[in-house]
Image (cartoon, rainbow, N blue to C red; front, side, top):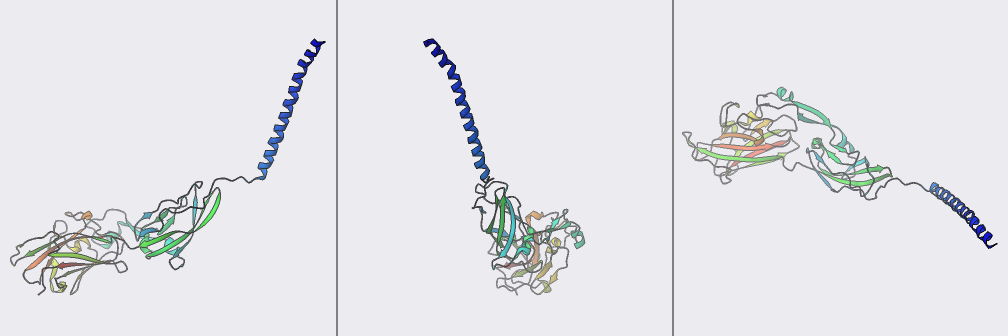
Length: 347
């Protein structure tokens, strides 16, 4: 009998294990169904859009006429790509400035190299290319601020903008996202080497100086709002102007542009005739926003700037003075270049 009971127990164990496994499987199915039902009731969130998206450099400075690009927005963990739309541009008084920044403007670029033999406006214009470009563009992805040479047409001042940012998570509007400071060109011109060289009545050079401020200095006044021209003046130590109309200011040499080592202003800008007044020489330039000089001369590369040599007479003590002056102009406007002869007195 004892033997039969043991055999019965052995036969019952597998049956109980099967029942237990079935219950566990059933409970797992019920639990999985419950979790699926709960998940189906919850909204699935895709990606992330931070509440703290910003431009690292703010305010952002832009010089008129200078191509400038900012870094992209700081995403602070937001899911990329981040799409950016421009909503509004305003000036410091809150006035709409959208048209100022987004209206295409004409800018001029070189189509081919200009040579010193291109002496007419027609010859110059044949080597230039007109393009219509907006002063400002906003990068669609990342929001880079992109300013072109057409910012030369944007008035100086402080501006601000509103943008909309969006990604897979959603979108946000950022008011006053970045202040934009439009400033005048920091260096509209540069002054290089200048040399003062007095002569006696027999055309003998008495001595020469190399950028010595005891004998001479050069200064330039720039007016961005006026026409594109150079006004050249030579004055004595008292500020009295030497008179071009009376022959007191002349070109130092009559040699051709092809061979001379003493260039004239007109060689660098042959497109318009010069105008002489009682106090200055006026050289009109083409109305293009390009740096000057536009070309090189055989003996002087444009990269070194313009060199001009003038013969100044009408002072006490010397028959005349040769002044050699270097300068370069970086944008359009009126440049009044005054050369001071600091040891000379007009008769």
